[in-house]
Length: 433
Image (tube, rainbow, N blue to C red; front, side):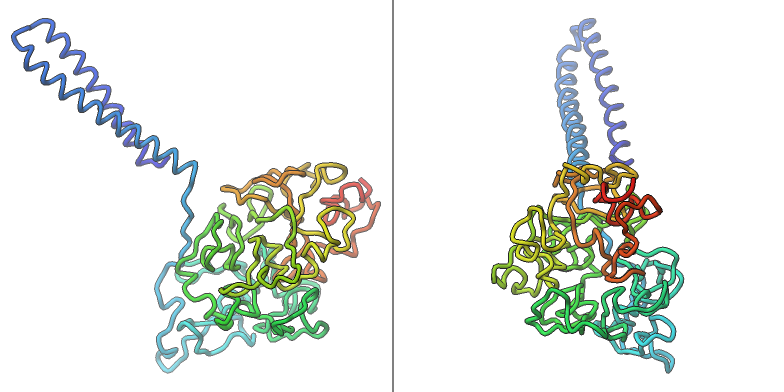
């Protein structure tokens, strides 16, 4: 309940109390003087009407407030600020170009011009290469995917690929988007993909061969995201029929974006993104409509793992993991519920069923608020669904295969520092604790 509604409620109650006292006093006057009975009758009638109006008003205020609390409206996170912070009309001012955003000395720090009259490419705005994972431009906070800050945002950091951060450069540490100008040296295409669209290794930040925006014929870069920053819906996004109301502009994906003080971060058990998952992976079965629609490529089940499966299909469909969603699996499953029996019942044994930001899980229902509770065997708002991001960081990490931890350090029976971490967050009986 907002302060203004509280004030209205108090005022109405005071007026109501005063009117009741007045009415009681009038009753006494009526009993004492029959001479003014007719006038007092009229006064009493009008007073009762007023009391009914006040009562209805109070009830309406309480009802509206209750509905707003029970069914909160989406939080607007539309970009704000001076237009010239992001746009330039002719990319020219005082004999200089205006497309100046980007990381110093990096190839994506171009001179423009760029689509939608912007002053930079996707990586130019979101990869400035500073020591801050969030930068401020004219009052607007811009999340960074290429930086040297001590900690990263939830999606990871492309700087591990180039070696600007971490233990050394490696193509295996993240998605080699072409904007990095750091071409893939090993793979010929996305692992687990039959590649009918000839994506190859020419992966972009957005567009037909990227992750964000419309993945159709709208090209790549800004053009596939046009308008989304100005309409962006923050917080709970459970419609996902447009780019702007999809989770992190991943078209067709639902979820809850961190609504706490640590935006874009999986900070701790109580402050993190809430991902959407399913209880059964997508089934391909030769049906192209599972991924392809008139609007472009999108997951038919609206989950984050389904989204990854649009490129890495063989890893994440029912057919790819072994034919059904029951153990034993041929590949590590996603979009399956973490069992409530055996070792899985003790998920994150260090905090016993407390949400782990090292090995996060998805929920079967997009929640209204963030939760620190994980319930194995459950698929609700506090459920535990295994997803791709339980193990990987899409933008990159300091470990091979963009994993969240050092896979080579996961030693069965260990009671050392790796115990209770990484794989052992779910497989709690495999370490030495």
